[in-house]
Length: 208
Ligand SMILES: [Zn+2]
Image (cartoon, rainbow, N blue to C red; front, side):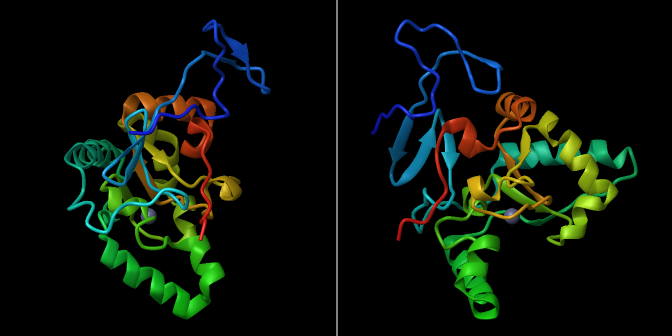
């Protein structure tokens, strides 16, 4: 196991509280990075982005807790006459390899990297990510897209690649892509407006 202090942490040796540049108060804490069988966890939260990859054989379907949270969310949305379905949930390493390659063939590597993950780097391989209804940019303007953005945190989800954070997450805005992180962390991120990368003080960049 690897234990590391992340540079953006607001830890002081005496455990006191400091102020972040935006003026909000943050409590001192140290985040713990672990690598277990090639999978990266920070404070127990699995990370898959351009920096952190998953092994080829990792994952075998959607996480049951995440799926249950989606079912509760979609049934609440249905009461407001909104309809949501998962159009892409778990994707294996090999499925992702095919998907990524087809983007490369159509658009070239640089554009493919903005919209698709290289195999092993897709959050869909974690079993905690889902694409809802469509992967068209127009989804953001639908009633479902607006509702999802406002409410998904209540069910433990985050909009993983928000607008204006492309340089941080490594991906363009995907209004349809949600990631299950549990209700506590989802609420924290909703309130702070931070991405997972910002919250944990990590980057999302291909090294090779
Ligand atoms: Zn997605």
